[in-house]
Image (tube, rainbow, N blue to C red; front, side, top):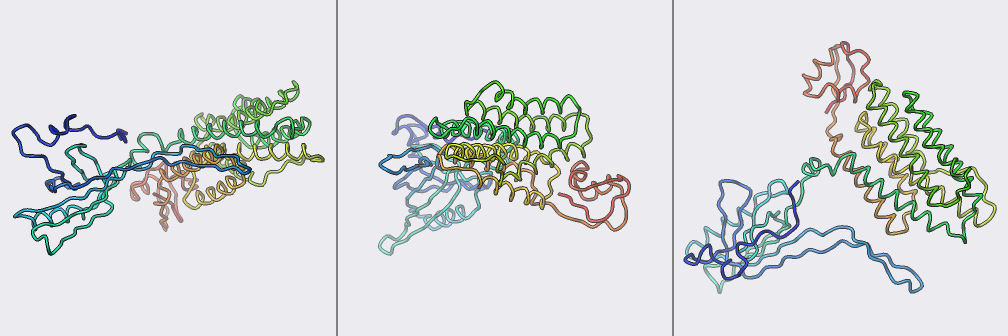
Length: 424
């Protein structure tokens, strides 16, 4: 992906020189060229120009004269507004040519090109345009055009790896760091009960072991997953009561389950078995929006410790579920919608009051959403196969990859496939 929001290279660094191709030439005019290769640029006389952008900022305000905090989210799209004139003997022809050029659809993939003598050439998407004539000024018209600078297409993001499993992994890692830090800041000496903390993480260990227990694979891989989970109780047995250390251990255990499931998928295990592992683990994590440990909270400190640990486990489940969701290759369109609904419930159950947590949760949601949209599940169709047929013939007939057909449909016999068949 070669996109850069930096300004284009100017024609010349000195403004007088920028107005001419060379010293003997006539002045350079502003022009717009649509994304059609046989249409020439249409020139106009520039009167005024505005180039604007900014920053998207999440501003958090706090009560009791707590001032405020600003968190940078993103750079806003660059907007270019130009005003100019078209005049001369061929005014009508040039006016109509510009109007028709602006009517041609533009996009990030097929942008128009705005040429400005003092700025250079911008790839742009047309958003608004207006032509105004006045009876007192015959033979000319004024034009006002608003462009948004062309950005990055979804396809380019896919090729650049921004809508991939790696993007979800990175977003999950950032949420993990934010959640662990938030957990440690919440459980200060004033509201931390160490016995309740140990009991809460023992419950988390039991929940993670239950998820790992549903995974099928080689004994060595399963032992590695179980060993990552039991590190939690090892820390507790060693007397560790630091919230940050226990939080990181719990996140590592959940990541170990996700990593183990994916390692089993890449091993010699059957495709059906590995996909079942992903589905089982995904559903176990997605169902934790109402998680509550069975430990008792008899004091205010115990209640605060228990609530913080439960929220941590929900956040941990959100990280693991998002990473598994973008890898659930057997997900049909209907099943993906069900997964997404459960993921939204899980996300809404997580405490996102701090700016860091809110931003991290939103980033993970976006990564998971883009990971699903990249698989084009909305394009899924169904065809009834009345007479039994081989899967290779059906893959050729439907122009759908054989492996994808197998992922979308429970095919028991490759030579006798019939009934409703899902394909993309």
